[in-house]
Length: 453
Image 1 (tube, one colour):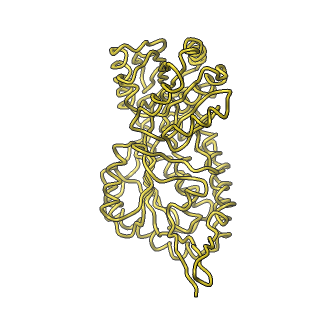
Image 2 (tube, rainbow, N blue to C red):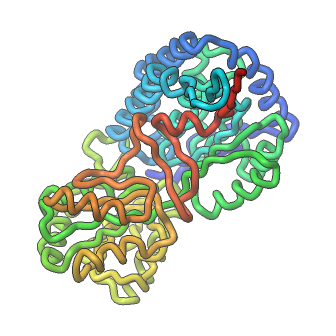
């Protein structure tokens, strides 16, 4: 049984039946049976269906945003924006998939030689709870437009969101089996990964879980795309626009109550502007309103689960005991629900827990750098490599700095974000493969070489 719990109250709100082993096989069979028909569907017809899905998403925006607020605590204003982003993703691939997948002619000794991109088959997407719609469409939109059929195993935290997505596909008249919901407990996922009808796996989640998924997929010789954790650096150099840098750093750290893989997690500031930046950040963090995610004025909702709240508090306390200076927050709330206060830790060093581990919550960590070279060293002193940011009014110098940050993407004077037009993904313990953009749609295709005499 999948149990949905409201993180604002800590109370159970719904139960959903989970599938048995035989039912899992039947669901995968439905997607597998639909593959031949779907891959042979004209790409223009597939695009029309994706556009229909976008329409249904927008028509059900309020319902979907409310579900996210109730199941994982996302403020309803952020939930509406997530629905819009998911719809945009569907529309983007509906418009651009044909050009992304166009044949590539390559000169050789043939009369003609080219590469075409054909779908792999039935895919398994294993999704997290923190962006229930956006991450689903990051997986679904490019995979479906490439001609694959998709099995969606959503997180047990958000079974209502998974069912609502399934209903959206039905309302959009998506053919049976093209997208199949797989409501199962986490231990049952291995059955799906090892099912011979599954051709490849997309996984978004923690690095620890990603390693397990990668090992299973590799043992079955199945390709996988892994988007895992992050401890993204946000480097503020001495000549940065501090007001703007502080505003964006706070937004990046606090959006979704800090529960984002690509959030700015380690703010590394040149010592010349360190004190001034901290004052700006403290003022902006202090003004944020925590509360009921269904309240229009709430800016920071609760964490999704109690264990996440407890682990975040452990990380904060261990770092304070090691010498970090706590300017805001840092205390475990006594009220119901899984809130954690907006917290600001300064004078953090690489030996502290909040520097070494990924922090998944509204905790801003600020580290002082002696100079740009030291800042770069600190930025790269991590097992992760998802995203990064650098702030400087010298754009050329910032670009040179950005190229030396070891990560899958870097923003200069802006927020690190995912965008349907651009590839996203990590290196090191942040995973491998890319989602989105022209690169993402080619992860789950057969790049077939054709040689004609």
